[in-house]
View 1 (cartoon, one colour):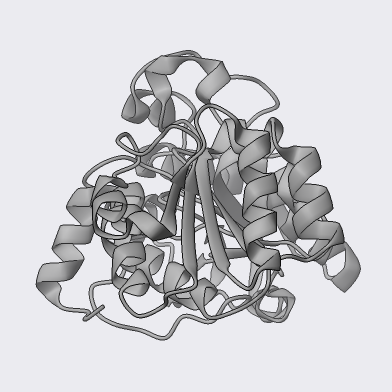
View 2 (cartoon, one colour):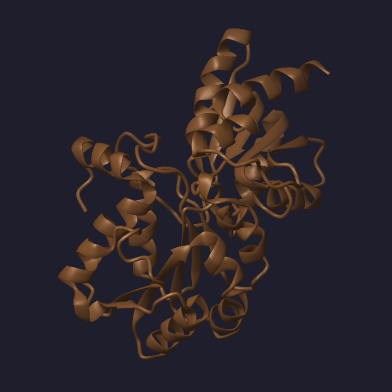
Length: 323
């Protein structure tokens, strides 16, 4: 897909889910005839209607049967297809965990699982629809890549990159419509390599998903307090860019992680494991959901109430560095 300022704005309005299913996958299917897309009764809600109508022979809706979906996807992959299978992140990561482990982890089949509406995008639907444990679950499966794009353009690039590899992956899509733009022009995406978005000193924020935009806003706000922050988009949580983390420890005394996920087992956990292995003196503080389920509300309300918006991040850092 051509990267233009107009397309970037369109992808932003559609959000990550709409961009992946209504734009990126149909574009790839036009050229890649072995591409198959499966969903568990989310054809309409995921924005897959365009794909279903245009490429009916490359599409399957298995109904509300997430475990079966992964099994069918595995069978199609064994026949030489590149398969994308999707439903809500909380359901696919939990109900289908054994199937993902056995078919994608143990067997290494070419299936890309897309967890849509991850984090708290389904805010008012209740904690059963919130997905704040999926990174931890997927990270634990050997051989499975775990990726969370920051905006619409990065979503397109992730889907394109995965469509030409035979490695299994889990992709989590966060946010809603009108996703903030992080990347305003084309760039080179490399799975497993984080992107340095803002070069500062002394303090760094490593963020993931749509909260990357909040990290950038917080960094701008903190300039008024005499702070010059580095901001990294760590779109690939597994395999983690340990070399980039090592470089950050050379110039920064504190690293903050920011994620729409529990601080246990997610990006913060992955970075903590890396820092322990590196044995540096850099301090780590993790911003995310604090071992508790959130109160209900719309997406922006939940993010704000948990201090994960730019204002919350700014306040946390100011208090943390003054203590």
